[in-house]
Length: 193
Image (tube, rainbow, N blue to C red):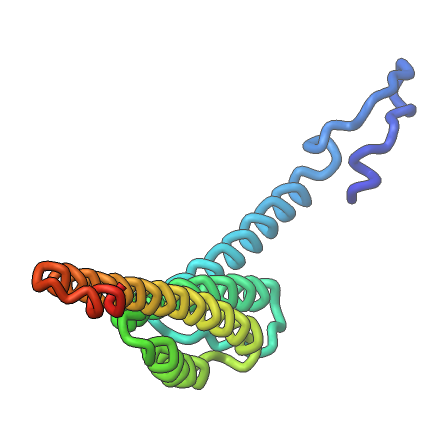
């Protein structure tokens, strides 16, 4: 069919060269090809839309063996959509927990990790087996990032508390020295400073 469409025309009364127009070869064949391509595209697009709708409704995709192009398109679209949705859910949960465990308490990094691990375990139990490795990588990345941020905040809070305690101690020593100086007790002034 394709070769006939582009053969050179040499049997015309006047020898003209050029491409034979597609409609002049076999209009019925062309119409059938057009309908088949349109139907194929519609099936694939429908499968992709179904996959997106299933994931948007919170359903885990059923990624069975793909026999047809439409099933392959569904599997591909569903897998990508599910990974994207799960990634967003993980990011939101990690952010929520990181706000709750803000690092003001030195136990917060461990408490965050424990809570996030429980959440991610229940999440991974629902993930289709084909997608589990990618989602596990995402879980690890989100956990590591959040624990690092919470630990940094906890260290910063601890540093600020230590600076405040040292400042308060210095201020108390200076007050004691000032009081001793007012009272004329030189021995306490030297000890306080």
